[in-house]
Length: 149
Image 1 (cartoon, helix red, strand yellow):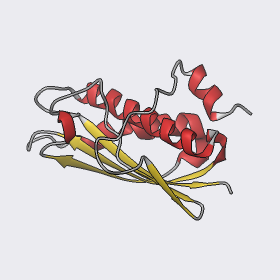
Image 2: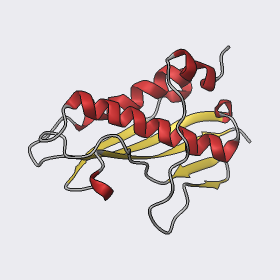
Image 3: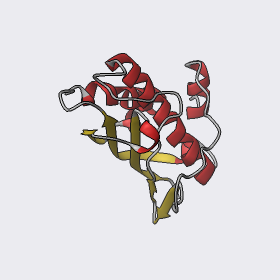
Image 4: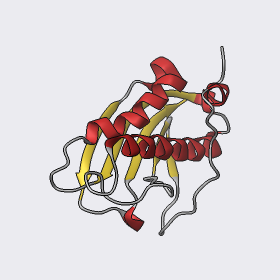
């Protein structure tokens, strides 16, 4: 069985370097066997969905945000094969008031972890629209995962 890192490579994807925090917080906090991540935006996609960006671009932004999150997780636990279960994902989409395709955008993150983690990638999710996100990033995602002890 391939590791998550090997599956990412098979998909032609790699984990990016850790992004610096934009405030007084840490990238994740571990309590018991749960890992709570801070929100991760993207450097590549800026603007509002429904005005500046298409649903397809939002999908790619969500996928990149998940790659950023996986970098945080790998840095914290050493290897992604220690992920036992994705529990909950919160996706915040920078969008116009009229935009209603937040779930389609967030599929970029959900589809990626499904491909890489299989059954462990099944998760609860919220996809919500926001009037603005830090640095005008298109998307920000935070999550809770269960990890092997």
